Structures are given as structure tokens and as C-alpha cells.
Image (tube, rainbow, N blue to C red; front, side):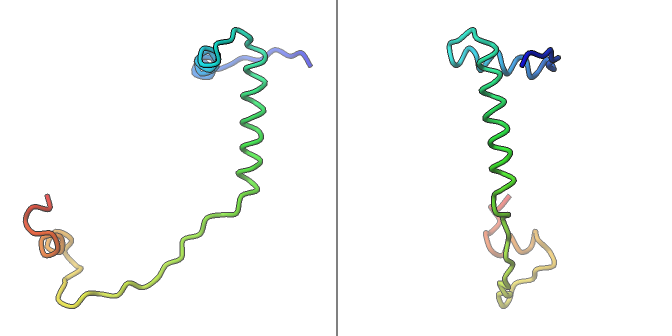
Length: 82
């Protein structure tokens, strides 16, 4: 398929960098390969299982005041925590 596209300047620069990295002057081949890889990665990302963070209670250590972070750091790490 033949079409005309207008590339943003930053995209054009990245394609030129990719062409230099590959040591090629074939713009069409580089553009097609980059588009293929990008579309495939997007599809794989959409199919990936979502990452979930599971919270758990850590509890409080006796004798530590969690209301003042600076004071807590001083108690845990000493005066050199800064």
C-alpha cells in the first residue's frame, strides 16, 4: 500500500537514529519494522495479566512514634539520616 504520512519532528529523528543503528538507508523497511514491533508490543501488553499489589499488615513496632517521620528516621537511623 502506498500512502503519504507526515511525521512529527521527534519521530523522524528517532527513525533516523534507528536507521543509523541498523546501518541502513532503507527508510521504508525501517518504518515498517518499527511499526510492526510497536503494534505487536501493544497487543502483547493488552493481553498481559494486570499487575496487582496485595497489601498486608506490617504492624507497629513498640516504642516508635509513626506520627512524625523525621523523628522516626532519627530513632531508626540516627542523626546521620539526612
